[in-house]
Image (cartoon, one colour):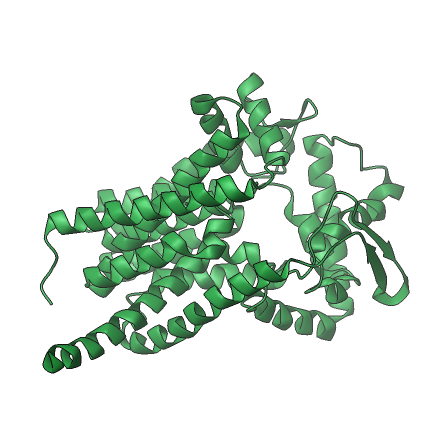
Length: 426
């Protein structure tokens, strides 16, 4: 089929963006999701004195990307939460345009790009998280922008631009750091070592100021929050927590483990944050070594939960949620209601067809797997990380665009198969 005219492409991009923004703003007006979080507190400290602080104490436990975004949004629209959420919705909507570009570049068909962008624009899971208090919306947009520039790059300057997007993603979630060597390896194979160096250096330049700041505060280059997450994801209670409850309800338990050591003041200094991070990591690894088979089984289940057709966890936390821990990994949870049936049905009805179509799309592109290498690198990075840590559905949001791309491949193939028959009948 002939390539689309530039005007048609621009109209498709504009229409996709308009649809994405409209759906997200409508959802924001109807649902008005809560927005209070540590990230808002951190953005407040950035606006007040330019530091990442909680309770007046500097912290090195959080990535700066999302707090910086919130601070910028608040600079533009003030401290009106609803307007900040609207800005976030608009930024999230840009992912639809980047996905159009990415899907078109990979498939060579602008129709696939339009289909992918339209699915992204109205996809309930992405809409739901476009206005919430997490970094999911920003991270999703950054990853799609990175993948789009990575695939479309024809010069080292554009490869370096892809590295900038990747660096911004790392500043938002440090867990995607492995994408730097993975992306560099792909560039080396396809475009040579200079392209690999351009990607790596540009990403590291973006990351460097945050790494230097953390190192000066407590000697660690990365945020010192992975230890507690590793501990609560692998302690004796973790295997029974999911999929009913999120692992966050074990944070108080993690703190109580360190209380005898006197290293749990609130707020903690950067030095204490690093000490605790090392201790929690050590305790988690010891628990995993003591129970290797239980750990292996948990990790395999985590992969299944990560792609579950039901929203995980099944229960939602509240301000009054409490957990009572017993012996042998037993526990009881109070004041944690089940998710609404409506939310579960909407998710299952929208996600299951996309997953099925994506599996068909993967088969259709089985000969182009090397061309799609960066997409698979992104997916593997997330799957491994959340198998090791915790696989709640919201953590899958940033890679949903990969499923949407392959689903669009399937849908386009169906249209191409049916269209000639329809024309013949006419």
